[in-house]
Length: 180
Image (cartoon, rainbow, N blue to C red; front, side):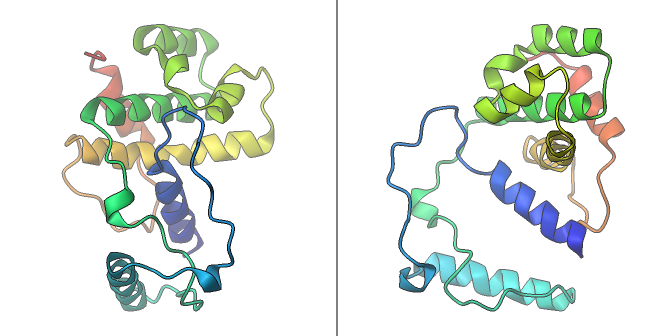
């Protein structure tokens, strides 16, 4: 159950509009009790909670929290942007597994990875001795990479997330292709 919660959190974070541009919008600073969800947010929450209950997954009880942007405000990424994120996420996972430095350098050169990383990801990628927390955070990006492969049509179905993905299989998708 803990893995499922972590996966949902990772997928939520990975789905954010992360285009390396500074966020110029004013963040929500009012208490969640003062946020009125839109109809699509309420419907999405009801559907998610029903699914969770069917799988005996605990549901957070605060009715005014955990809403994401309304569907009308979500920026859908282009296929090229999804590919760029998949490349970045795969690289992060490989570095977290302590892949050979030459292989990582070749990977970066082949796919221009550094340009696809967020500032936090770039700090990890360039660190000679990343922290344990950076390693764990990057390692979990493999799950987001797996979902990106599904979104791109390389994986037919996403299994119920009660176990980690097979990153070895997932890496093969990228290594057998070029960026263009």
